[in-house]
Amino acid sequence: MILRLQSVASSLALAALAVSSCSLGAAKDEAQNLPPVELVRQAIYNEVHSSSESGRHFMFKDQKKTVHLTQVKLLVETKEATAGMLIAEDGHPLSAEQRMQEEARLENYVRNPEELKKKRKQEKEDEEHSQRILKALPDAFLYEPDGTQQGTDLVGHAGDRLVRLSFRPNPSYDPPSRVEQVLTGMEGHLLIDATEKRLAEIDATLQKDVGFGWGILGHLDRGGRFLVQQADVGDHQWEVTQMQLALTGKVLFIKKLNIRSSDVFSDFHPVPSDLTFAQGVELLKKHATQVDAAMSPKESRDKKTTKSSSKGEPKTEAEGQRQLCCDR
Image (cartoon, rainbow, N blue to C red; front, side, top):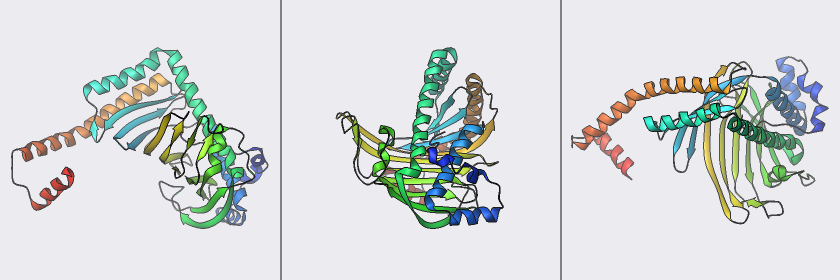
């Protein structure tokens, strides 16, 4: 999924330490005594190898909010690519026409192997970019301890101690490509699960404008922020649970960049690792129908309430206040 991180070659030297067996108490003590950058290296090492070795696939829900609308999607990971189906907008299920359009879009991938191949290629490139960002984390920043906090169901593992590390740019870091260039202007904090040695959160803000390709290709504006949170969704399987982006800038001097979105990922359910894209599409259709059935009674009640109000029936004081709120 979104934001899978890797470390550089120096992290490999810590592989034995990262996977060594020890008691729960010893693991916590070890995390507390490790230099911050070494704790980061171990967490990143585990991120890399867990994502490449687990082979686990999930179906899950993505609730996305932007400036203009809220969308809910169902997504399923397959051995070929990730299939996603829009199931609701602004709190309402899709119309019959919208549903047909969604299904037709997915069926196009099933019927056209070349289109599915392009989708898979794009996902692989996105994953590689995220991996490169992860690779750079131990060396791109200088880290300092900044306290601890408890893990929750959405951040880390519930009950585990999360080590908080503040970070700022490492002046000696030389980004190898445009992908890592963005890190040179960021500062913020990380949360690392001290028991699992996994990255639970990264919260970063741009402290200066960051140019790409000497500013010719574009830039990101100062003040941009991104937040990514991960959690153990069961059986020591970690997945991204929330992602927030607030970035502005410009591409090629002309096209303005304005990304403001929030994604909350939930309802993770394992699916067979050998699931094909076509099978994933059928699974999405089945679950989308179930969601529609669950939402329909609420839709009917909402329509009845709206119709009753339009006839001028008396409202309670509380209802009147809610109406004023909604009409602003």
